Length: 332
Ligand code: TRP
Image 1 (cartoon, rainbow, N blue to C red):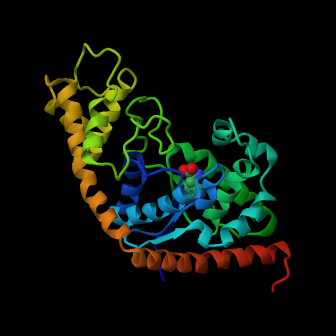
Image 2 (image 1 turned 180 degrees about the vertical axis):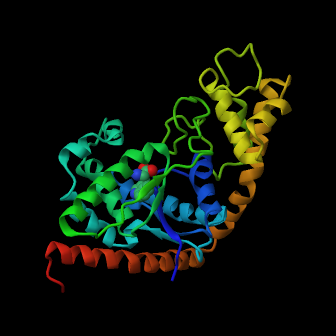
Image 3 (image 1 turned 120 degrees about the vertical axis):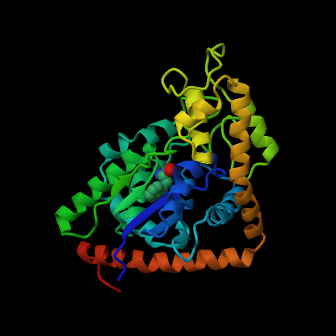
């Protein structure tokens, strides 16, 4: 029997993966690959809560899968799959909608932030589907960025409510927020998270971008408002731009903040930004090349997502059947 703890996480294919997705999420998943029984899902059903161009959604889903593999997520060690390939997500999602309160959903900050236009029902009930994603696999930990903590809390509340009525059906999972690289910020606005759906293309670096594009973005990255100081020093409150670049450089090279400060003593922001750009280019180069190679092999990618869906469905259906039985649904 597998004694390891279980992990589950998902990323929406709503934009191209960024350096933030890599340093904040995927790289940590790779580091934990042998220690956990892990499920990593491409949550395409969540992505359609915001209008998508169908061809782009399809392309990004395949690219995301290829990038997971290229980053080191071996599909024979972890379960990689596409949410819409496992119908149990939609099915348990509906059930949990009936155990999630209007008031709870109304308090979600992500809903409030995204509610400027196209306020559809799916956007509102998104956290119930996310709870279903998670609870189907009975995981112990949910590695997510700090922005998703509220959704995981809601998932725990819903699972606890359900267990209180029907007995121990769900494992109550815990959010697992990584310490390093948890929050890579925008290069142009270091007070907001680097996001794949950012309006400003200069704020974020995509995993598949060319070295030239990456260098250009780092060279124009915001350092601090008082550029006269021109000194590389870790001070997130006063110099969030410099702190963010140090965080990125540290993730790419393994150097500590102290070592970085020493390395760039008296060398100024210009030299530092170039060095950060070069370190990132070198870190992403093999990932970009490997992604291209994998994307060209469509049959291989298909075999990966089929295998993933099969493995995921086996676990998910077990939980779903248990839930249906508890609810009083007649077994077919
Ligand atoms: N809501 C997450 C995000 O926007 C994506 C997501 C969907 C997710 N289902 C999940 C993350 C389950 C972790 C677990 O980033």
